[in-house]
Image 1: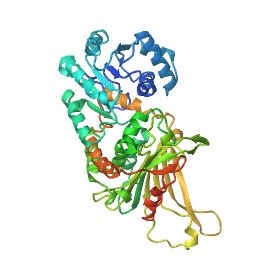
Image 2: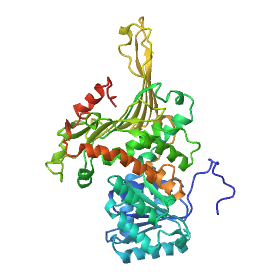
Image 3: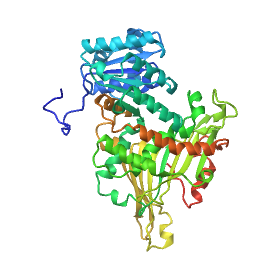
Length: 505
């Protein structure tokens, strides 16, 4: 029973989940060590976890509770955002449990089921559990079938709620996404499935909704009458790291464009929801995804690239084909840019240029709303040579904030107008630092808030955008670009044909 003195509208008290268990499959892997365990510690340090909270780790390693606690301690201390407090860790670590086993090990899953039953009584978690799939996509069906076989996915058997968290990539094309959705929804009810896209947990991404719908300043000009184009950029200065096997089989479009960037596009393009109920928000995003149009000629309206050796931040970088475990004849793209449209009244005729790339000059993710130039400028042409488009730039990372660029007179005796920028930064405007994306998303899973989680229809519709691109690119070679450059020359030419240029992030 909920607290009768508390309502959902009362923001004075923090949101704290009911007593529950977080079961992490693949708990010794990179995602768990770098993101999930630190997020759990930070939530505990902020007082946002219930007293009965427990973490159960499952992985193919012969760990005992003691040695697992050491691994978790090292991971939490290295990745924690909030100050380290030994007393917080001591209380949290007492509620850590580890179960070794492979994903086809019936006995280990039976042990997991009995452990959750014991914790139900001993820690008072009331049968509530969330299962986090921090595992390769190929293992999803195995684990789902085990959860189904043991009855761990069935709320009626557990006596509490049961939820599942699935990391991207959710399928590798439309058909595989549909099959995976059917499998997940067969084991768990759709309302208990959380498909996680960590970009949606970032404060600046959520601020897109606040910027648009909490202010009267921007919405009147958020349409084709005033907007010339929209540019969404995700640039990384790193290469593929240790992800060679996964990355070479997917490429930039499947890895990032299908999920992160199309979700950003949907938030920029969506209509105002009637409320911030999860169903309402997702319904508006889905309308945008369904209205996306691809370029008539994909060969001229999109560009694939692959990085060559070069220099990034003063350091020598090898080319993609020289990366460990990458075939010498690989045609996988490390850069993708495409011109998309949104076929509705608000955005008709406005191009959305979306690009993603590795080994770029620096790491940045941003959304740039490029406004049309004034229809008439009563100035001498020489006075406005330095005046460009008005821009509203939402910086998602790393310098989270919003920049508004507009023209202003240069001090002096002549009427010279040039661009200036008003810069809002989260780190300077607020005393409290922004939580990590996984902090917010793990907390939302435990509370049961699905607002920031794409549903099956969004995932499938996103693949309907990517699949035609992949089909058109099949058998083609990516355009080369040197590490440290902003992508292939063909990408600049794609915009130049329309009289536009990429914003230099």
